[in-house]
Image (tube, rainbow, N blue to C red):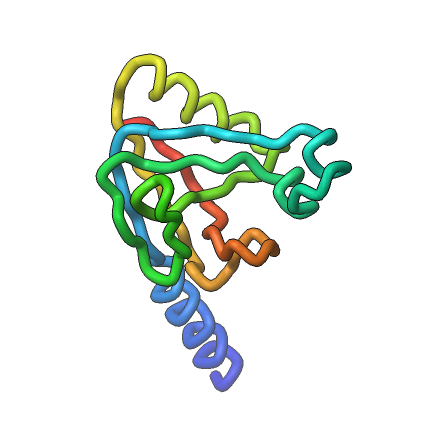
Amino acid sequence: MKHIVFLLTILASTSISAAGLSASGKVGIISTFSKHSYENGGHVNWREYINFSLQGVTTLGNCATNTTYGGPLFVISKDDTASLSVLLASKMADKDVEIFVYDDNFKDGASSGYCVVDIVRAI
């Protein structure tokens, strides 16, 4: 019985923390950095990510804001081709996307503090 209660407690806390944060809007900028930019002093950790912004989103939890783009920049892994496809298709079609950040304290590893996005969904 103790094991069942413990398991249910873990499952309940997981579902609560999985709520996370979400935002939606049209895709603003999408950027990546070439290998050349790192060899010339660019931030090493950015080569692992694709940065993007959402128009009209000015803040999201603890995600760092970027004054150039008027809100937070979000990041996905360069290996996340499915999310990148959704972002590019939505930008080309001028459609909104919804993003989910389950942990706004999980950052890109750079000093920028941009949040890593867990889900990108066309809406």
